[in-house]
Image (tube, rainbow, N blue to C red; front, side, top):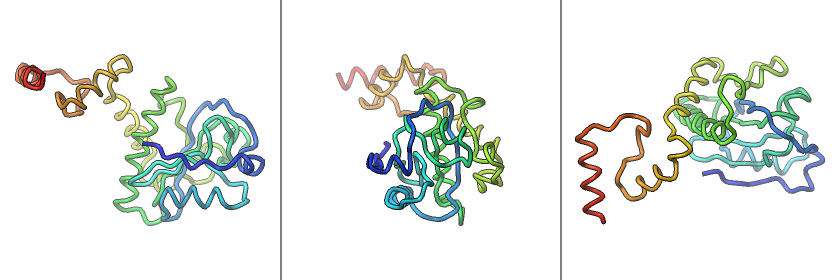
Length: 201
């Protein structure tokens, strides 16, 4: 679930001056150990130009700027005016909370890519691509391709768009456990599903 804590329009002139038709996502590491909520709160209340659309930690996804507006995140006008910026939290110290924040970010990006009919190769960028800064530093240290593979795996494991509502219905009813949406069903599993449907009416 995405929690919206959007900056007020009065801050657009400072933080988000232009309307935007985004072309990609730009991934950052925060280089501190603040939560996503605190990252967005700090960005929103100060009067510095630095800004970003999303901050993601091990528990929450917080949005600070609408996706159809620019942000000052990439160190280049092209990146700022075409990219949806995503900050992965807890990157200073790393450890389990960063690992979980990165996993949550991969899931989030996969969801957003499918929403826009975008692919990983063309639509996931790193801060480094725009101004040479070594960012997202910890993600780069651990392997950028590894992170792209995480996103692709999440994307591959999502139910197809045409089946999404049916999949969610089956999970809500308890007929399926919510895993392996694209894998084959064995006869044993099919028998179990049929029995659950019959018993639950």
